[in-house]
Image 1 (cartoon, helix red, strand yellow):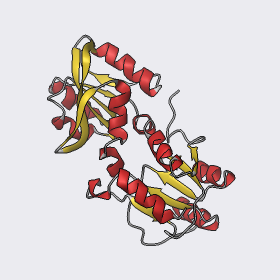
Image 2 (cartoon, rainbow, N blue to C red):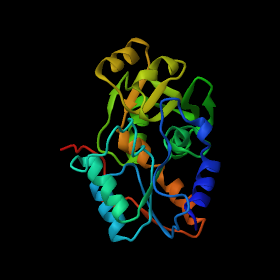
Image 3 (cartoon, rainbow, N blue to C red):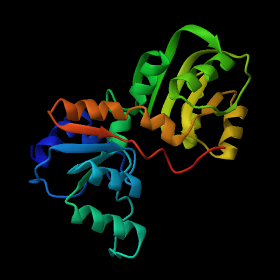
Image 4 (cartoon, rainbow, N blue to C red):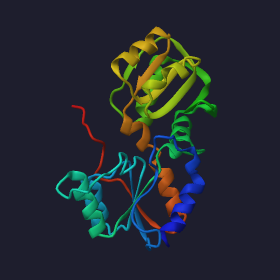
Length: 250
């Protein structure tokens, strides 16, 4: 299948008009006329991801985070980014990234989080890419934290708020959502991937229970949706195997 045909399917699912103005989603590297039989799906393009794509003879890497974000003024092959570009070109591997459009689309990152948490009546917010929904039955904040750990398969989270507070309405935003706390204060709790220290203080001052469960962890859970899309095109798909994020907790 031609890469251009694959891109049309991906963009029908996650339309590019949903991208934030600062974003750089889309074709990062490669030719739209290239034939694709096998794809690798990952959150990022890293050395281990490229090596795994080569080992599995993939012609395409589909990522959530854009491979090229800041404008390139030169391609220095002695830099990590330049070396990755050279390696991808040498092995004829294209890269396509679907970022904030996949955050916002129906069935994207934030819908998957809501679905897996068991939230209902979640709808896109007009002023934000987040989702807001509610539990059929209210629970204590400490039980909400336990649910998050179970759903995301994480051993710890960061939080602020009264563990005994009753949680009914929840806002979710995969990835980095600390700057949007002011949009979430109409809910009992807010789940995002990461937030700054003083953003936790803002949440506490607003009486908002907030949990951060990891940038990687809150987004990687949705990658299977991309795998399903590509599999429906009769493409062989490898879901990230070696890459587990940029940091470790011990």
